[in-house]
Length: 544
Image (tube, rainbow, N blue to C red):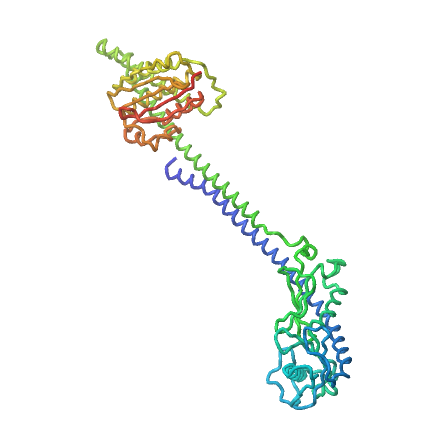
C-alpha cells in the first residue's frame, strides 16, 4: 500500500472513535438540557402552587378582616370622645379610639398606587383628629394625617362601609386603623380606633390557616397547613406583620396582594418535602453526576480504543518491516548458496582449494539459513503460554560451548574471534530451560555481538555462578548500547540508534527472543558496559 494511502486509512480508522466520542458529548449535553428543563418546569409548578396558596389565604382573610374592622369601629365609636386608653403598640390590649372634626384641606398632589386616580373636585380642607390625652403629640399628628390621606382617596360610591389601613408613626410600630364616616364618603366627622397590627391580624390569619386548606385537597388530602407551608404577611414598607408558627425554608415561594388593609402582601413558602405530592414523580434529581460519569467512561474508552488502534497499526507496520527484513536476510545467503552450489555443480572451480572454499561457503550459508529459520520459529513460539514449552534440566556450560562452536564459522567469516571461559564455580551447575530455545538465545547474543562490533574484534563469552544463579556474560568491542535504549531493546521489532549508525541488517527480534526464553526459564536479562568499552549482555538463570 502506498505511504499516502496507508496514512489515509490510519486516519480514517482513528477518526471513528473520535466521532463516537463527539456524538456521546452531544447526547450528554442534550440529556443535561432536557433534565434541566424538566427540573425548571417542576420548580415553576411548585412556585405556581405557592402563589395559589397565597391567593387562597388573601381571599379567605379579606372578608374576616373587613368584619373585624367593622366590629372594632362599632365597638369603639361610643368611646371616641373619651380621653382614656393607652398608646403602646407592644401591648396587645391597646385600643386607641378617635374622632375627627370636619374641616377642609387641599387634596394630596399624588394619590398612592392603591387608591383610584379619579377624585372629586371639592375636598375637605382640614381634618384635625381628636385622640386620647394619653397619646403623645407625634402619634396624634400621624393619626390625623393618616386618616385624612386615606379618606381623601377612598372612593366608595353610594355606600360608605368601614375603611381600614395599616401604618405607623415610626418604622416597626405598625397599627391597624379602622374608621367609618358619619355621613358621606369624603366629609367628616370620622370615628374609629387604632390597634396594634399584630393583635389585629394574628387571630384572623390563624383562623384561616386552621380552618381553610390552601392547597388542592385532591393532592394533599386532609393534611393541615402547618405541615405544608409557611405564611408571611408584610406591609408596603416591608415590615413583617404576621408569620405562621411553623417555618420552612425552600425556594418555592409565591405571593399575592390582599386588597384588605391597604394592600398587604401575602407570601407562602412550601415545605421542601412536599414536592412529591404536588408534582408527579416529585422534583427530579440532578443527572449531572451520572452524565459526567458516562462522559468520563466514554472518553476513557475512546482513548483506549485510539491507543489500541494506533498500537495495532504500529504493529502491522512493524510486522510488514519484519517480513521485509527477514526476506532480505534470507535472500543474501540463498544467493551465495546458489552461486557456490552452481560453481561446484558445473565444475567451474579451477583447483581443489577453490572447490574446498565453495563447499565451505555452501555449508556456512546453509548454517546461516538454519539459524535464521530457527530464529523465526522461536519468535513464533514466544507468544504461547509458558506451560506449552516444557523445560529440561541441562548443563549451561555444554549449551554455551555448543552455541559458540556452532557460531564460530560465521564469526570467522567476519574476522571475529569468540573466546569462551568458565569459572570453576559454574562447574556442575544445572539450569531448567528448553535446550533448543536456550541455544537459540545464546546464538542471538553471539550474533548481535559479532554484527555490532568491528571486524577483527574479540567477543568474550563468560560463564559463572553465584548466589544460586548461573550467569552468562557476552562482551563485545562495539559502540555499546545507550542507557536510554537498554530497556527497549528487548521489545520485538525495536532497533536502536546503533543499528542506524552501523547500518547492520536485522529483523529486530533477536533480543526479544532472548528475553522471552530467559523469562520462561525464570531468569533475568540486562545490558551494561563491557570493560573494553563495548556492550555487555548478562543472562542470569536460577540453578535447578
